[in-house]
Length: 114
Length: 114
DNA sequence: AAGAAAATTAACCTAAAAGTTAATTAATGT
DNA sequence: ACATTAATTAACTTTTAGGTTAATTTTCTT
Image (cartoon, rainbow over all chains, first blue to last red; front, side):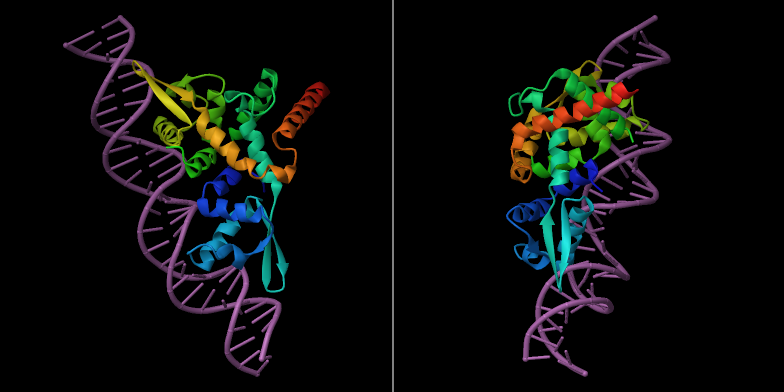
């Protein structure tokens, strides 16, 4: 599970982005992740399920705790997709030739067309 | 309107991503954008509203046509946010070039294999 | 002036998101 | 054994996404 739609959807919520940001500084338990937020524990569980479903995190069972660990792969996928547009702000990524863009774009269009 | 949540949400739908990909090759009318899809015109209008609301596109009125134009700013914003995580695949954007080139190399190999 | 075409709006449907509280499972400490 | 803590599941509510068809607005063509 590492679909682009799922990844972007997971990223479209501020709570989930905050969780990811926290996890970028090191793994954390569900309780630790929940702490900064005012919402209920089940709400956090649901957010974590979405993050897990998209592959952005994985959970490791450790006794009664669950340690959450950021996974880079879907983030890479998202950045790569956004890379198609890099020529719109030219320079952030080094020069990618047009054939490259066209090819990648073509691939994704087909893929996206369901 | 250029909120990160809105941007990622807009990107979380394959139809909308396909539309953006199409627009990355040049502006297009609503009708042209709708063509490849089987869904109704109002459905496309809604997708475009979401893209517009997130700032990913803007529309220019031209007679009875509406020309849609990709806007780079929210894409930039998304890439920048993802940049926080670049150390997870260390080397950040410079290395992304290599990744993309590798992708193309892979595509070419497939192409050649035919 | 009338009709066709481009796009949107309106009204509606179904499914899923995002939250809640209450109940449950499973591991821990006394 | 028993109560406590960590986390999840269940059941429910409200809102919104994403699609539909039908109607409307605006522009273009003849």
